[in-house]
Image (tube, rainbow, N blue to C red; front, top):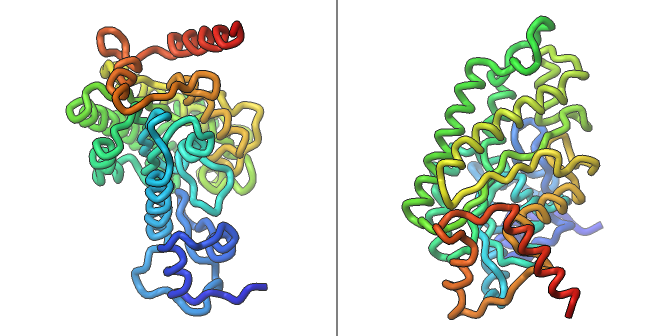
Length: 350
């Protein structure tokens, strides 16, 4: 067995991009106490303790971002459409966790160049405060902006026993949301409106995709993110899936109602896209589920192995115009898929 690293050795290897996947798994773990994904050192993993105030969760994220920048600088990107992805753990999970989340899987598929600034565990409120997307979009000049947010806000509220009522057998499950839960959905809707307003003002022609997750599985494994909290609130295990469905349906309705007001934005309904695939935990799909979701995104953006189109620099502006309709509205999923099918048929005749 390899000797344990000191903190200084760990930190140096992490920041230089030399910490291997095996070392990530050896020294780090998901914190079982937190209501959202957050990582910590395993007990006794290092030879000595990190200094006070050292946030390994944030440091791993920053190291991952730096490694991504190195990859993007080495790759030839002119033949790929570009995507900036902002969001949470459904777009980016810690590097020692496999499966790869949606945006990471989009990068691995190789059909697009992806700048993924999403961070596991981050709330919508924090993303709006940081506004990283307003900094990174002009740097990367993407063809698409994709966004995932709001789930961690709901999870934190549920963990605080605020999102849903205490179980009452006489109350229909579709009325499980508490007054604070309904207010939180309104806040999430306002947050999405703020985000899309900022994108519309600063990047008025940038096609944007928002969604609201697929249905989680609170009865799976330990129920870390949903199940244990529903149990504490008195909900019988047989009702947990129904409560989760209510949460995602209401969140989907909230996001879709905001997105419809923005001509360059669209809501991608991901409900039931992971049906039949195993999950990683009670909140996140496994590898096959995330693969299916990434393919769903690729189809929505008209980019796949069958339909990818090389774009040289002088054609970038023209290619970008082709991603929107004749009056500047985002191309519908139906139009995108019909074009993809036509392209595939044309190739088969050659």
